[in-house]
Length: 176
Image (cartoon, one colour):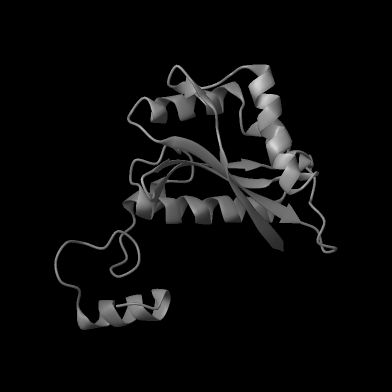
C-alpha cells in the first residue's frame, strides 16, 4: 500500500474561523487540484494543523474512506473542531492530504468497502501526533496512545531512562 503526501494547503479564515463561504471552499479545492487534478476526489488520511512561526502543530487527524477528501475534510463536524482549535490562539490553519494510491500509482477513490490500510494509517498518525500535541482534538483511537506507557517509546515517565530504555529508544527511533 502506497500513500503520497500533499500540502500543506493554507485554509482561509474569516473573523477568526475557517471561512465557510462556498466560493472560498471551491477556490481551496481548485488550488489542491493544481497539485493533482484528481486529489479532491481521492481518499486516505488528512492532518489539520496550525502553522505559527517556523513550527507546525498537529491538531486533528482524519480519514476519508467512504467519501472524498473534498466531501470529508470540511464537513460541519470538522469545521467545528478546526474552529475550536483556532479559538485557542493564532497561526495559519493548514491541511495535509495523505492520499492512498493504487497498485498502478493512481489515486484511490472512496469506497463503501472501505480501506483497512487507511484505518491503520489513521491510528498510527494519531499516535505520532499525540507525541507532538497531547491536546490533539481526536477523541476516537486515542485511549491507548494517551494512557499506555512504554519507556523510551510511548509516554516515557519523568526522570532519567534506564540503560535498557535508552538502548530500546535508540533501536526504535534511531536516537538516544
